[in-house]
Structure formats: structure tokens, C-alpha cells
Image (cartoon, rainbow, N blue to C red; front, side):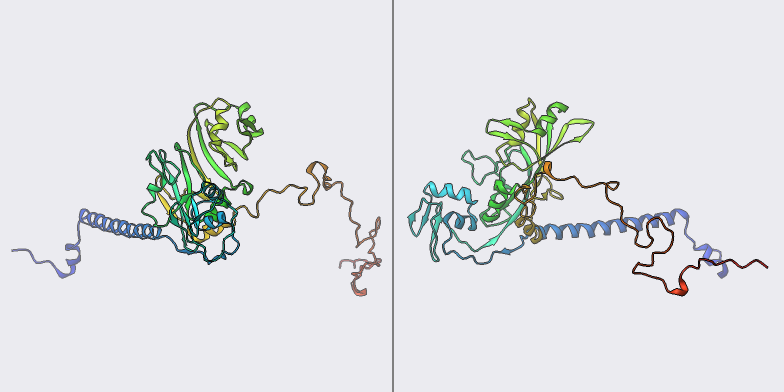
Length: 368
């Protein structure tokens, strides 16, 4: 028979051991961690689902009257304006059943356009996709050799006919914009807009100071002279790692700059294009741009284009007058006091009342 416990000591008798208390804390901690992990997993799933659903950016109806044919194809999302001109010259475009080979052919309302056997519609939902391109993928819509293309990665993203803006060669990775907005593609690839691109370059050997300066001054390639906008070492301890900012869109331009000086580019990654970065986008993954990003792209470079001083009505920098230093500037005259006198200047606009003016013959009273 168990000994009966005095009611006054019941709370001490029922007290848990330290081991039981610790185990209770551990179980609570496990439950909290599990609930926290489930909460963030749910948030991640919702975010991925939101990314998978492309935002509908509907283009307003555009007036077709007197629009050039190549511009019409660009608005229809077939390709950029320059590529459309080549497509038309090759005889692959029909207007109202007749082949047209003149890119400047003026369209009229109601014209039916067929390019590469497909009817072109000018009003449609626009799609903007940012892809973090991996290596071994071709930046093209179709490859005769049946190699992997960037469109294979995003084929589940949209049913619209999209195409890449600009080119990244097979062994180059990084930021790539894919869209069906031909007008924007033309704007971002046109040389006059000087769209900025930043690359992370890994060389086979350290870049020495002499070659560093040569690249900054500009090098001459087989298709003419070229220069970078910014060149820097990514890591001063490892001078194989280089950062390059450039606006030229010539084919394999970054690789050819280093190859002309005897370097081999081991790895080339585009980290920024027209203000877009690959932040939060893993290699081989993609996401849709939001409306703010699309709006920024449409106005990208319009206010920041480089203008020559002469075009702005300014003199060249070498002929401009140097601003005066502080010591060279003329000293301002003191309005309150006349020069060389400690007396108050009575001609000043701000004058003190008679009772507040300093007394000249005022004497301090003697101390008691």
C-alpha cells in the first residue's frame, strides 16, 4: 500500500524530473521547427506557382495604316525589325496571298500577313521571360543540327511564339531575355541605344597590367576597333577573374578581345543585361518579368544616352573655363560694418532702434 502524501506537499511530489523537463523542451522545439518548415515550404510553393503564371501584359491595338511591313512583323512578335527585313528579302512573307520582298511595303487595315507559313496577328498577350542560360544550349529558335536550344528550357512557360533577344554563344551562360515583343527586342539590340551588359570572365592565366591598359585604351579586331566601358579585377588575389562592362553587341566580342592578346577565356557568364540580373534564378531556370521591370526595359537607355558636348551646345572639355577656387573668388563686402571700422554702419538697411544701439560712453557701475 502506497504511503499517503500530505496535501501540503503534493506539488513537490508531482514535480517532474529535470530529464523529463528537458525532453519536454526538446519536443516543443521539434514541433516549432516542423511547423516553421511547413510554413516556409507553403510560401515557396505559392511563390513558384505565381512565377509559373505569366503576368498578362496586353498590348493596345496599334494603327496598321501606313506601317512598314518589317515593323508590322516586329509588332507581331515574329522577330526583330532587322531580322524581319531579311525574312522579307528572302521571299518568306506574303501579304494578301502575294509574296512581298520590300521591307518598307506600307500596310493597310485588313491586310493578311503570313510569315514562314504562319498568320501574323498584331494584337496579342506579350510575354517577357528572364532565363539564366546554362552552357551547351544554342540561343536560337530552331537548330538544323537538332542541338538543345534555350526554347527547350521554357517550352512549358507559354504557348506564345517567343524568341531570344540578342545572342549568347553555346559556351556562355547567364542572363538572357526571351519575349514576343519585337519592338522591345529591336530597341534593346540596336547599337544606338548602347544597352549595357556586364560579364564575369575567367581566363587561363592572370591578366597583366600592360594588357589591362591595352584593353581599356581599345584593341583592333578583324571587324574594326573596339573598347570596353569598364574593366576591373573581380579579385585582386586572383587576377584570372575579370569583370567587363561593354555595350557593343558584336558576335563573341568579349572572347575575341582577350583572344587577340593571347588569353583563352575558360568561363564567360553574363551577370547583367539592360538592368536585369539573375538574382534568385538558378542556372537553367527562368522567371517572368513583372510590369515594373517591363516598363523599365521599355524606357531603358532613353534618358541615359551618351551625348557629345557639342550636340548639347557646350564647349569641349579642354576649352571650358576652369571654375574659380575659394581663394580666387572675390571677398564679399561686409554690409554690417564699414571697411576698417568697428562702428556700426548706419547706412545698412537693418538698423537697430535707438534704445538698442550700443552706448559709446557707457561705464559699468562700481561694485558695492
